[in-house]
Image (cartoon, rainbow, N blue to C red):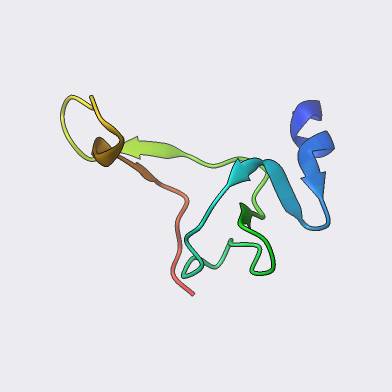
Length: 61
């Protein structure tokens, strides 16, 4: 968890890039997430592509 604390910078996490500005956790002024960690989920039984995964931490504005 110490690594996550060091990754936070100006209210966003430098380790989690994000372009989904419809999410309430998007940093708004830069393309990063404001959460310390996110949960990645798969939306197919066997995830074998980018399209088969999603950010499970997404919450709409």
